[in-house]
Image (cartoon, rainbow, N blue to C red; front, side, top):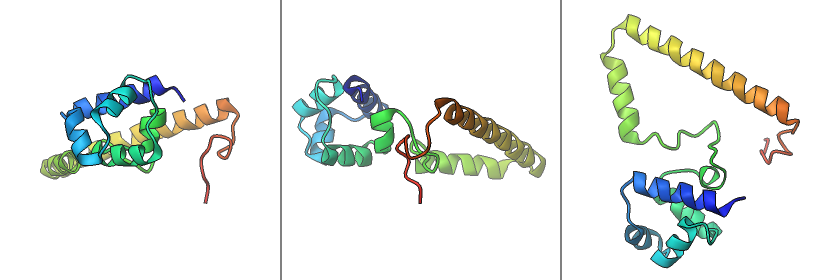
Length: 134
């Protein structure tokens, strides 16, 4: 695990949300000094810090640590963005909705195929990759 990448992702997400280190401190109790150390890759966040950061930054711990998000999560899809997508979809004609659904299904097939290819080429089982099954 590379602490620089973790810190970079955390800083990037904090800035995307327009949050300051002081706001992080007020919401999580993580001092500005510690946040600076984490964001600069000099220190890894503790488990409680990761949990707090996950909540305030609206992202998964997996993403902070590895830059990956499990399939079951839409971690950057805020309620506002989700509502915008749904409202826009509802404004479309039935034909346009069907076309959009077809496009989505094509993209999902492509994504699933790429994941399967990557999993097969790595030669690792789900357990070896750290994925919990069950």
